[in-house]
Image (tube, helix red, strand yellow):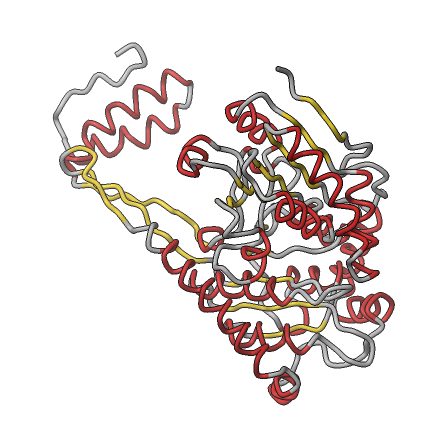
Length: 435
């Protein structure tokens, strides 16, 4: 049976997107040219904030004092989980060496970048979890300097909970600046900061475009689009939980796709009946996003069997993928394209978004076809090295000379020739291209 769409999206994540490229390009060029003064002008214009850009220790302590103890405990819990998972990830990368041929040794070394810039959105929602996810992983990776950057609110500054999270997770500096100007300040090393080697963290379309433009001169975690989520559910799934999980992700934004893929028409129809009521029950600001996302971007797809369901999911390559179906091990072995996988109704994307330990900065818009999400590895350069004895270099030099001449790269060949002549005087070598 072909995939049957009980609900089909009328828009895609790129529909109606404004062309922000030129705006962001102009702002970046202006800030790079004029430095701190330009960044402060944009901060006054967009953030409507004129306080300190880099928080002092007294300001950090004052913000922390505003955070309730229970919230502090929750943030510490999430930080501990993310830290321990990141430490385990780091342990999977080891410095190694191998004797390729007798006397020639090559190796791998993992080196963290020096400076990381971590962006935590702070507009409509204060993304405490983003501060935890980005700063913690940079700290575990071993970055020497970490700047946490978040948009301040007029007359308030950076949300106190974000300040607390960034502080306990290991930020060296906390910057009260948002948008393109915040990204630019970290990239160009304004306000006395070191120039960032990598920029990480989610943001609005202007932040995402700034990171895309700057990629190459700095590293980035990924080029991100609107968040998306897919649920694979069979006939035994709890329709209310499925519907609730779909709505929970739709509230991210008006253009955040959510998809249900199932082999049960009955389940699909029950979920579709429940979703509108669950959306109506949300607070107004959340309800607006979820209503638009469900109306314009959501899809409900009925498949013949679980293999077709899995194939459909892999085609979509969702950022978040939930399985609420029997035989979870089968799904774990079969599925190949996702940012993060949530197996069984006992876990949910919301856990991963906030506190379970896996990172919530994940590939969107089908990018899970070729990349994973933010991890400790993103901050680390895997570099190689080699050394050799003179005897060990001999066969490599001979092969290098002949291959180089075959390619027409005589300079490369002579770099091998001079070593053979020095190390093995009097020996005759056939180093022509035709050997």
